Image (cartoon, rainbow, N blue to C red; front, side, top):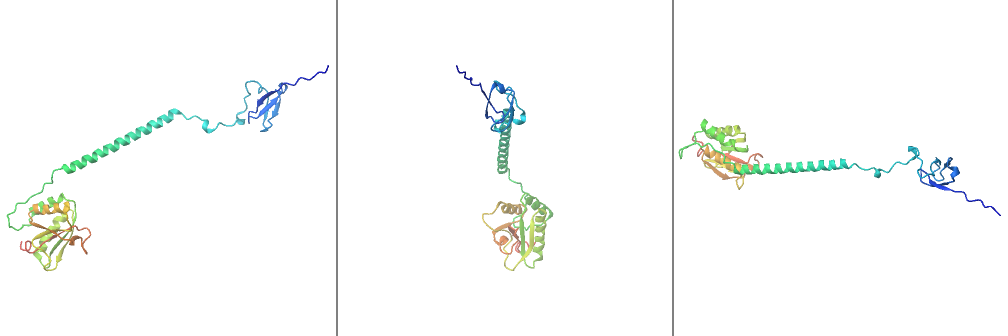
Length: 250
């Protein structure tokens, strides 16, 4: 009778470093073997049991970054903070819109600016007095400062004195004044005239006309492109012209 050797019992485990299968017999459980794949030297003691042996931390691959869980609490707090900031920005924008709308309403509904009116006898020439200069100064104070050119007939000293009077008042009101500039003979009009360069007349020119009128000056509005024409001053938008017909005899 021939005896046959029973096949030796083998067990299979995995390399803790690379995961490659390693076959070993129970008698080799206390031996140290080398992994046929990664060449890592491992101990088989305890590895063939259901609970694998713990290996040093240095021999274990670190987990992938995607496997690290993101704290839910921090994410929720950031979302709430962003929502709160967006709500505050929307509230601020709404408050600014309301304030701008209220400002526009107040401007359009504001009462008309009060002028200082000087009583004058019809046909009487202006006195160019201190009271009249104060009235004109206060009337001009409510108008945005402009540039104006004062023009007079050539070689008329009386009219020049009146032109200097106007220049002093306008400059005290913060205006830029050019002149008095002398006009060639026959180039001036009749009486005191306020020239504007274009139509429709802008509100500042209209307010200047009313300021002169209220101060007692019988002013004639005229259309004249000279204030912005060739050779004119770039900041001039109107011109005040005195003529000997009204101003030279005062």
